[in-house]
Image (cartoon, rainbow, N blue to C red; front, side):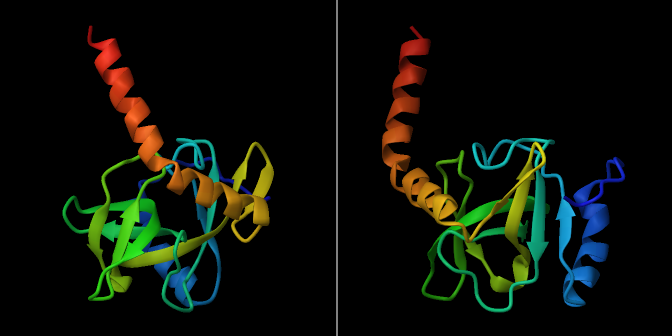
Length: 154
């Protein structure tokens, strides 16, 4: 497992160092914050390992990219491709897809992540099964969320 210095740094401040390391063929790691990638990634506790993509991203790859609209860096999954070559991205815990993410917006692609000291590699068959299950059950999960919202408001 990678060594942690236990120092909290905003990802925006760390991006130039990350890009330099990735450009030099090294992998970088960071702890993501937010809940948009739950249940895959947990806020502030999991450690993500990135590498520079050597080719265009594939369906269900998870990438760190720059979102121009909000001027933030985001970790989400590729769920589609636009005719112009841009990616369609979606957080595992989100229902609203993001469009117009160009390959130039991508900083790195996730190769593995650590949770509670255990490494999970993204090319493992169980992880791939999770990808398919989680994405293709999205309509059912959306319906359940809507029903919970309506039931909870009464």
